[in-house]
Length: 207
Image (cartoon, rainbow, N blue to C red):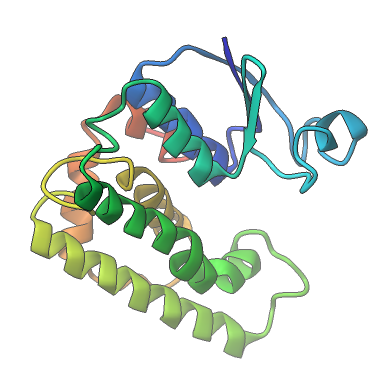
């Protein structure tokens, strides 16, 4: 059986859990990470030398990096509806997955560490405001894209790309800062709320 190593409070672990829900995959989960089993021990480092979650073990196959994992699962377990075989449609999906990992994540890092994690190294008011503004600008791009598609981030149908994007939107909504009004984002999250995987894994385990 597929084994997932990582705590459910991790946004990157929840990407994998939500993907499994969409694919109907059974799995076993072990809690690793801060507050649970340490990832800097030889047993875990042998699986991921970066000492970060998630890691999956699928039989003898071991993989880390959350976006690589969700692509693998969709490709391995007949997830064509999530991750299309057509090169153009797949590239569009990949575009938003990669953008979430680079541009969007980089925008929210400082504000999230300051306001949610309460990191003493991230308490510069100017940097917090800069991060908030950058985060809002990226959320504006999401809102614009959703207004164009009228459905989901990569097109009219739900795809693998919606999982990391929705998790990042949820992080934005849950962070105590000024939230600009993005009507397409609001409507998008309401559409996603009909999905079991969203309800179970996107909103930090809350309804």
